[in-house]
Each structure stands twice: as structure tokens, then as C-alpha cells.
Length: 187
Image (cartoon, rainbow, N blue to C red; front, side, top):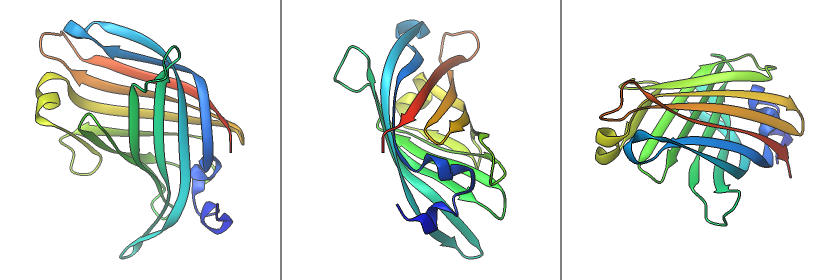
């Protein structure tokens, strides 16, 4: 890892590296919108990148991949690829990612460079921090809001809580598909 890049990552800098955790809990919809809880293990790899120059805007970030497996299985039930980005001038953290179900999210929030906790969110229909889905998911499990809270406990531990809010036909109100985990540095 390039120390030169890491020093420009602001609140994301402690995340550079390889992380694993087996304390994950996923609450997702099953048939009929009924909640099913899955306990899982997860591996996240964050690779520093930058600078990314958009005219007068300069971003630094982390290219990442995530894989999650139920504790009792070798077959992953979730994967995603994307970027966590830091815009120091605007004090913005961003996360853009895609999952192979055909959903992509660009979430964002504000933070200070030395924050150890920060949040990001996205809403369907937003031209800036937004969500898009394939036609089937948009009709049957429409993601209308995504929220992420991250807490960096120390150099070797961080946790997150996600709330992906789904509009499922036939359900009264939104279904809160939640995920949380605490991960430890492995490299």
C-alpha cells in the first residue's frame, strides 16, 4: 500500500487492507416478504487508489470487494464490487458499488478527515446519491433507500450497520433489509 495515497484518504485511511469478520447478521426478505435471519462471515479487501481528478475535484479512495458466506456454508450468498471515495475539499465520503443481482448504489455523506464514525445514504430517484435496479427488482423488491453507518474502533477493528429499505408489493410499509458485522484486520 502506498503511504502517499493513504495519507490522503481522510476518514477512510484506517480501512486500507484486508478485513474478516464472523459476527455478521443479515435480515432479508424471503417468500411473501417474511424476514429471514442469516448469520454470516465476511471478507473485505480495500485497495488504496488515487488521485482521481475530475477537473477541479480530486478524490482519493479505496477499491474494494466484499464476499459473505452463511456460517454453515462455503457458498457465498452476497458479493459486491465498488469504491469508497473521499473528497477532502468538500468533506464528503462516498460509496459506489454494484451487486450481481443487478443493483447499483452511489451513497454519500459528510465527514471530517479524522472522524472515526460516519454515515452515507442514497435514495431512489436522486440524481446525485442514488440507486438503480434491474427491471425485475425495481418491480418486485424496489430499493428506495440505502443507509450505512461505519464505526472505526481502532487500527484493527471496524463495524458497520446497513439498512436497505425495500418496497415489496403486498407488504404494508417498507421492508428493512439490514446487515451488520464487526471485522478485524487480517492484512
